Structures are given as structure tokens and as C-alpha cells.
Amino acid sequence: MEHTTLQPVLAIAGSDSSGGAGIQADLKTMLANGVFGMSAITALTAQNTTGVRSIQDTQPEILADQIDAVFDDIPPVAVKIGMVSSVNLITVIADRLTAHHATNVVLDPVMVATSGAKLISDDAVDALTQRLFPLATVITPNIPEASALTGLQIEDADGMERAALKLAEQFGCASLVKGGHNTNDANDVLAEADGTITWFDGQRVDNPNTHGTGCTLSSAIASHLALGETLPGAIRSAKAYLTGALNAQLDLGHGSGPMDHAWRWR
Image (cartoon, rainbow, N blue to C red; front, side, top):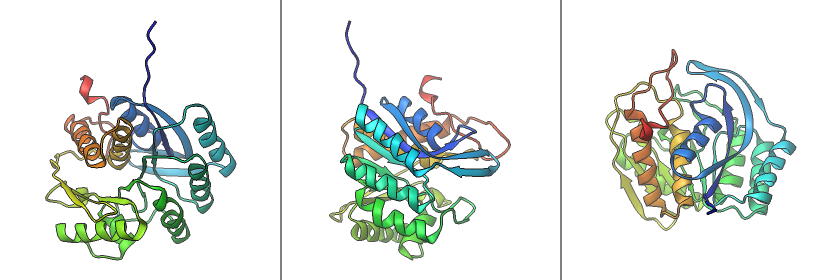
């Protein structure tokens, strides 16, 4: 009997009980993009398409054990990191990823809600930038997050490019500033640590259901890095997948609903 090998990818993020974002979106995305998804859960949330009701962070020792258990048995080729809101958990992730020499780390710095509300404390932001950013292959902030991280007012494409370059220079990792918060386009810009700039044109999809877009994009990038694509190639593949998921026009829930992660099979 022939054996099949899939590239394993680890998602480190919070759980979304409604299935559209977080770990659930990560694992669906990884399956759809041809890799084997694994998880280390940073928090339990009670949420749906209308909002988050409650959050309970994972104990640091349990998070460390989850990461160690995965690396000790099925070492991931790539790692996606999503929302982590406590300094203790950020420290655990940084320590364990360093100990295991993790590669192809994609970090989605979930800091600012779509509403503009701040999601993590200043202490946690400091830990994120000092401990996790230097381990990342690429970070994927949206415009409000890039603005918060750089202190720059981002109003156009030039502002996005300046912010991406500043982040790449400051933290030594590539930075993909996502233009989804612009009303006129969905173009993203990548600044690599050597100063190389790449723009990715995106199709703006008229769909109010965008729950989990950031989680989905970062997981898809990690998946395609695991498949051996270059960083710009992985971003192109991930954007094409996300566009398809939005174009499927899934409509669930009473708020901003999830996308169809399995659109390719409909």
C-alpha cells in the first residue's frame, strides 16, 4: 500500500465557537489548501457572527504542552499565529518556537477590531513586537494595526508602503499591510527585510460576510509556504483562495457571517 505524506502546519490561535474565524477557520483553510493542519489553542471564546460574549485564556503550561506535543511528534513545516492577548502566553509561544527552531512563521497581529476597538493591552503589544515579530517570516497587519504599530497615519497606497517598510526595517521580518480596510480596493503591499516591495492587486468582493478573513489569509499563506512556494507566491495563492471564499457568498448568522472555506468543491 502506498503511503501519503502531507506537509504539516501548526495554527496557534483562539477557538471560535461559531466556526468562522480562529482555529476553526485555520484548520478549514489548511485542509482546503492541501496541507495537514494541527492546533495549539490560546483561548476559548464564546462568540458568534454578532460578537464575542466571553474569553478564557489557556493556562500557559497547557499551551506550552500543546506546542511541544506537536513538535515532538509531527514537526510542522510552517506555523500560523493568530490572536494572543496575554504577555504570559506570548512569552510561552516565543520560548517554545525558539526551542523547536520553527520555520515559515506567519503572524497575524490581531490588535484592533473591525469596529476600531483595541483588543490587547499595551504590555501585550510590547511582548508581541519584541518576542514574536523577530521570529516571524511575515506579519500581516491590516491598516488600523499597521497604523497602531508604526504611529503613521495611513490614508493611501503610499502610506501603506511606508508603514510596511517601517515594520520590516524595525523588526527584521517581512510585513504584508492589508488594504481590505480601504473602501476602494483590496490591494496589499509586502515589504521584505531587504527593502523589496511587492504589490498584490486584489478584487474587492461585495460581500458583508467577512468574519475570519484575516485568519483565513494568514493560514493560507502558511499553507503555501509549507508547500514550498516563495513568500510572494504564497501570498498570491492565499489571496486567490480568500477571494474565492468571499465570492461564494455564503450567508449564515445575523451579523458579519463566515466565508465558504470549501468553495472549491461546490
